[in-house]
Length: 120
Length: 105
Image (tube, rainbow over all chains, first blue to last red):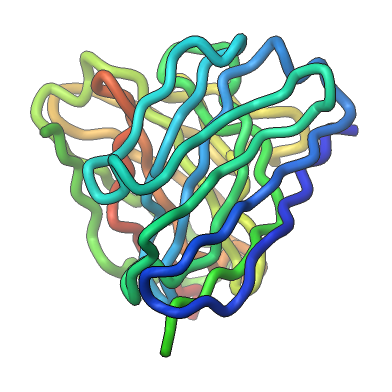
């Protein structure tokens, strides 16, 4: 069974940092692109960052570019998101997701999400 | 940047057919998928590549796409189908619709 388990969410002050981790199991992590997606309270889904299978290509949404860094360790079956210079509007549930190897890159597996709250 | 739009809400009676649209410029030329999200849960992929169903998704869920619109159709709608539904396509990167709240009344 494919499982993605996020951790690292917490309450942090504006300007602070957090590192989110995603532990993958039940599949070969190196086979898939991985995405981080977030959802602010009562709002819709927003993609943040994508990393390709071997970690050589990373892209970011404009809203987090220069502040967030995605990484992966296929040997340890983990994907991470380093978040710096956090702002109040970064408050959201953050999901680690797997992109299906299929046209359109549907996200066929989602973690349970981890809550990040940015507040003073 | 590419954008897609969804109606904020759709209502349907139990047993009837619900249709949720997703609109974008020449969306029919791209691949669209759909997610279902119930309160307090993570999103669940219900349709990908416009019309394919992942394993375990009931055949009451179907999808189509043509022109500027992709459509998620839920036949014989049940109370348990009440949820938020998001479309997603890919235009050099992921593009999500704003979501549609399906009410089964």
